[in-house]
Amino acid sequence: VTLVESGGALAQPGGSLKLSCAASEDTTTSYAMGWFRQAPGEEREFVASINWKGNNIYYGDSVRGRFTISRDKDKSMLFLQMSGLTPGDTAVYYCAARSSGAVAATTTAVSFTWWGQGTQVTVST
Picture 1 (cartoon, rainbow, N blue to C red):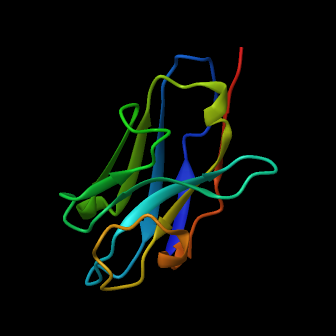
Picture 2 (cartoon, rainbow, N blue to C red; picture 1 turned 90 degrees about the vertical axis):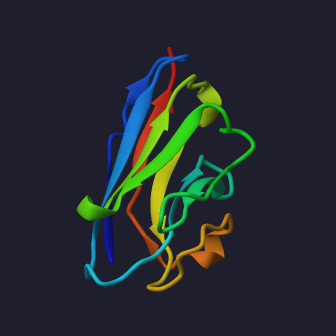
């Protein structure tokens, strides 16, 4: 599976951004997906994940209530709507997918097999 993120940009505090992730895949496969982020000098942090059906979602504590994850299986797309952005949200954001058949959402990076190259989000005045 190849994952390509887009939508990263410079945003002002309090602003919003929407990230997208396009997945190339065999249409017969099914898997959970998620978003992680990594700021300079920091470890990779869990942001959100969603199961294959889209009815079970987890959020990291720092983004809960501000970010919304969603997916469009028909178009093999994953999204992250971010609002109420703060400088603390500045990071490279990575899209991730679990292996084929791993349909349950999870919060640990080791559970994800496929990773995109990342898209930079910078929150600053």
